[in-house]
Amino acid sequence: MRKTWLIIKREYLTRVRKRTFIIGTLLFPILYLLLIFGTGYIAEKTKHNLTVAVVDESGLFNDSLFKQQNQIDQTSTLVLVKADPDHFKYDSAGYDAFMRIPKLNWETKSPTQLTLNAKKFFGANSSELVAAKINRVWNEIKNEKLGIDADKRQILAGNRININFNNEQDTTIDAATSNVIGMACGFLIYFIILIYGSQVMMGVMEEKTNRIAEIIVSSVKPFQMMLGKIIGIGLVALTQFILWITFIFVIYNLSSMGKIGAASQLVGSVQAVFTRINLPLTLFCFAFYFLGGFFFYAAIYGAIGSAINEDVREAQSLSFPVTMIVIISIVLMSTAVNDPTGPIATWASIIPFSSPIVMMARIPYGVPGTVPYWQLATSMGLLVLGFMFTTWFAAKIYRTGILMYGKKPSWRELIKWGFRKN
Image (tube, rainbow, N blue to C red; front, side, top):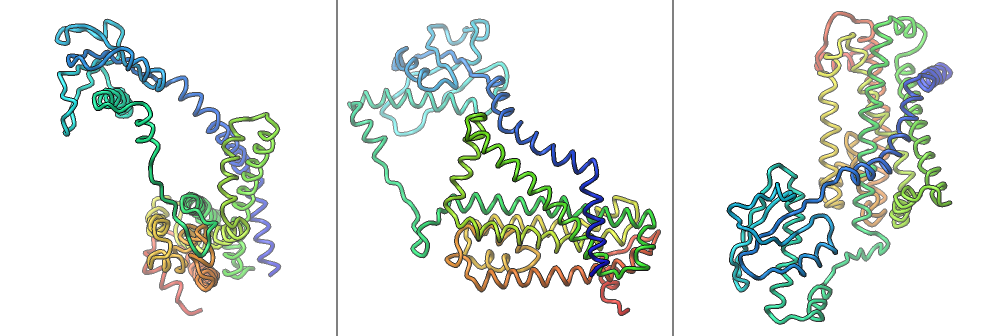
């Protein structure tokens, strides 16, 4: 145990003192601030609202309707012009686009197709905004023709039937909130597994290349070596994650004092979302599956790193099947959030290969309502056993692969190394 602790300490301190760790930890807050303030500023400065010249041949449209809609919706501007549609130079007149409205029959039950002409592309969203505005004007005209006054329009617009899903076992669960939280937790674990799992692989590769491992394995058992390396790098990931969470709470505290209004709205909305779920249980399960999923896959990545040389292409080819399993877990998570009690969600949340991602997509829907206690306990137990097995299996591969050079092993050979008797 003492040797394992020394390896954990070495792996942890070596990485947190690196310049890349410090830069990466500081880079996230900077990107976070840019996300909050920069995207809104850039979108505001670079947006282009279309000014559309409209030639009406139907005689149904008028300036007052256009002006009313332009005041309500400023994403585009519709201007009614009198001109010859066949010879009208709208770009020379200062317009971005041109629309010709032919003679229309307001009583028809089939849609009418109009064309928005422009000299350059403005994107599909721009034409959709123009279509939405022209349809609102057209609705006003039809309402007037049908004799539907303002009061009746308000009744038609406001008198709707909304349906709220009620879980009789747990009335506090909100499906939309659970969906968002489950997807967010699953994707966070997904990125942690891929980013830090590959760090374990690269770390083992580096030791093998530098011949450091040959010295280490002479005094430390392979299982102790692999376990220490996995836990050490896992603590590095946890440290960085905690620092990022701390930064978010600092932003929230500053914003609550009125210093950063935009951040206050964003973080405040996130806080409101988390008040609708069992936060202590969700945080505990997230921490467990965060570490458990990383430990499980890090052992596999470590085994791959011990079996290859400096060639990064070898690492990519051997790690590709593992990466695909993680990606498949994301696909299963998408199914689980739509049907959290279905057989796919249930089994995928129990099997260790996919449980760290899929189970976190189900837990926000409620425990034990959606996730029975036996399923949660089975999933956790199998993940712990899976981590111990993959670490033991990776250690056996490590003992053989760390001393082999100049040969690229196949997955079949790696499995033989794992089951080889000592």
